[in-house]
Image (cartoon, rainbow, N blue to C red; front, side, top):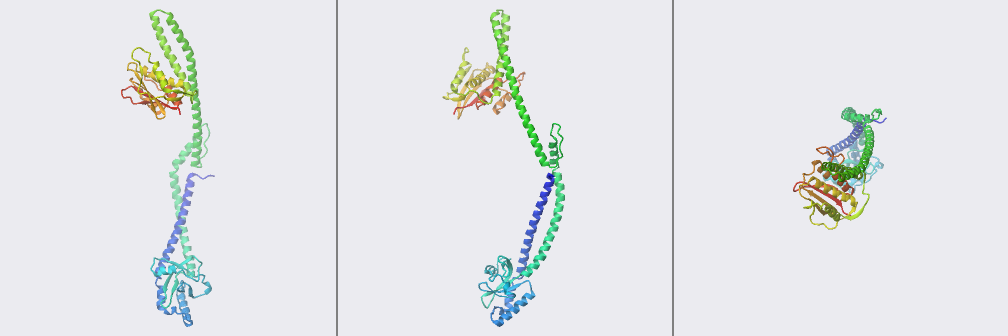
Length: 477
């Protein structure tokens, strides 16, 4: 059975505590041993010098003196069995040692630590142990021999002392460390488990809630591992969200298709109705009948125009890319679009302003771009009929062509400006007019055409009031 998150945290804490306790015990033992060595070497610093001063005959190498030397060495090692006394020549070779000569495994002592000791270097200093293997050092005391070139070399912790100290010291040290570590581990496990249980209780409750939220009548299973339960619940919820997103996309596609079909179905009877009304208006000569037919024609024309816009918008929203791509001159297309509105008597309602930017070549659907320009200019004229002319200016910025349409009307609603500048669709969700109904179809069509061509439709600050719209389209490479 998989352990829970709290249990795994408690075991991890216990393992870390054991490792930390072992590390502390090892470092403490090393520090204690170093301190003991320093203390012993400081206390015995003058031992070798004292021996040399009180037994000056140690420097002789005659037969009679050699017997006396053995007696002195024997007496010293009987008085203090922990030390080992050696006579060294000027090159560090062992010239005398009380005991079995075969026990000396290193006949030469490194004189570097000896000279450092005599120079007063910081303690503890470890030197060569002639009876030990190569690489194992011991603390020592040393003094130069006054009557010949050589040294009296005293190992303060001989092998016998090291064996006894190792048994006694290590046993007590590890026993104490084990007792302390066991008590600390037990206390930490108890306190840590209680603390972690309290800290992870909200996580456990959240895991239970997420695990229980399955839907579809699936009974929840008991939660053994909080993290694993949350991961499983998250995967389940992610799958459900992805399914819902796919279903919503299908519903939106179906909705657009319904709108397109309705607009298509409305367009035919409305066109026929409009044609019949026009024929009746020409046939009926009465003034009142003419007025009524004119009103009916205007209303049917509005409905026909609205259904045409709905059909175009639904077709554009269902498309992901432009179907017909060709290269054309945008500057010529803008000039033609402006000329279409210049046939009214008096001052032209639409003028082309600003310096010409030169040839601007685009790659896209010419009919759609023309439709976007026509919608923008027509909107400006309809919303500002008495506010002067509408100015259209063509600009070039880096790899983009920008068509700027400016009017002096009342301006766009704040929500429309926000969506245009943020690149958010004007139709999903649709913007409701204050007086009822939904508007902005012309702007929505122009916005979608710009997006299909890799461009954008946004607003610009209006210096003299009204509305300034910028249709930005990428130039052909």
